Length: 218
Image (cartoon, rainbow, N blue to C red; front, side):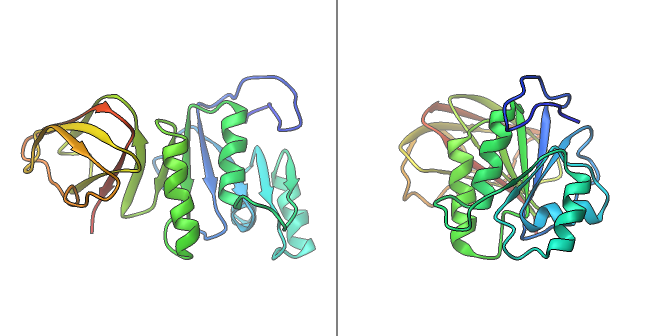
């Protein structure tokens, strides 16, 4: 487990990856490998009930009974209780905490579906924490990437690939049924939905901007 705390003790996380479980719930994948865990609000209760140690439990916990808080404290190294009257969501608070703790990769579970405003916030968090934050559930893997080249393989378990942006971007796609060459994408462009690989490997090149990559399956 990570020995760095939000309260300020300096150290380095033992794991490079942090998994955040949100109060919307969700199943824990079996292939996360070595990772630290953060519970956000009722997500902390879910992890505690599964007896999974947490580096941090964070949220306003306004819908968590005190006896459940005792269980959360038993399985969490640190508990941060937020004021229910706040500007940011529990997911944003948890992601920012994981970022401050120094994790290279942050996986957000339970952040899709449910309230649409929270889902939109979580999608925008991908852009704020590009190349670091991943939204995941059984049907989707979502992350934002910045300038550079990114490879996708036919056997990675995903069928559809969609590419969107919150700002103007310039991208190229190779190895897809609908290739692009130095194409300008704007935030209202929708034609880049549901692409598929046409070869064993495909490649996205982002020449400008930040691109939201959605890998999905039915």
